[in-house]
Image 1 (cartoon, rainbow, N blue to C red):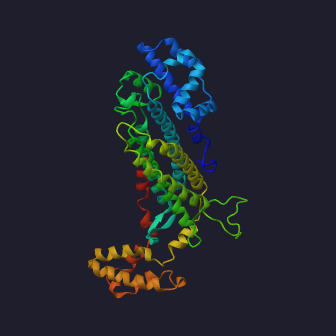
Image 2: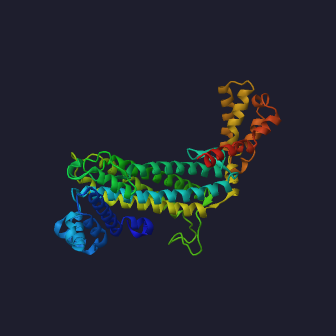
Image 3: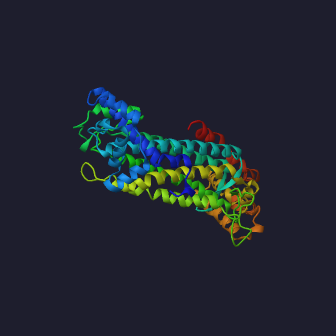
Length: 437
């Protein structure tokens, strides 16, 4: 992934130095296990740990000749270990190293992503609590529906990211397996206890049946989880983008001193961070399908999955890590405009209370279809008014409609237009989201 969208901690997981460090650990721990079994001399296993070194440039040079990355690594390792190197990789195959290493790297990446989710969720919770009672209009189909609060909006996103964290925790467990079973996965030339030993040293579980490679349905679940996380990132980003539109202006990305929004128009303050996150989310989801297609391989193994994973494993995790941290910045610095929220809420002159009137009429004995028609007829008149004539218009029309006034007393009608009605269960919802999650 390009440096622009890479954070160093995640990037280092996928750099050659970390990869070869893991490869060496797999080989060295396997030597220890085989030495305990008496398959190789203990002195040989000790020599591997003491003299095991590698040089990335030399490995690249050897791979250019051998056209095989694991052989190139083993050759360079042998150059440093000496005669005892003949005992390295006994009964193992390349996939034992490659797949187990990938499991370690993906586990490391998952840990970082889970930490990112924790940080983002904390920021969302702080902002949600701050705006727990900040009234705003809820929208369905992009049209005013009924009042909600900005805190409730954010609580919904918190709950979604909490589910993402649970999925990632499960996916991490799913991909954290070790396979050291030799050619076609039968342990014909290596004792299964070697696999068990290496797995314990690398904090992995043993792959029950590897067929020489770790089954790719595990990886497909991991990438699918990244795709779902990207959807959660985009959903919150899209909400910010919509609410920042000039005609809405209920929230705004922080616009820092010296920042410029347009090369042509000096007045612009654009939601560039959330637009960027929307694009990144598309890239992440684009890597889910190849992971699903990697499930189907020929017989016990082929390498059609390899080229895919060399790109998607680092790129997808690097992008998710970057996006979660960028979104955290957006949430932490988000500028909220409660006055604009209230102004927008009142734009339709009270139409947002239509359901309350409808229900009150039915509860007082009116047929639902008749009640709906009466309320809708008055509501449609308000829609046709110019905006400056809408304030209070819906209430006045209802108050002067004989069919409604005979069913609802003035005091009752006034009570139906109480905004507090829509916030009476906020504490319950917040306790479900933030205390029971």
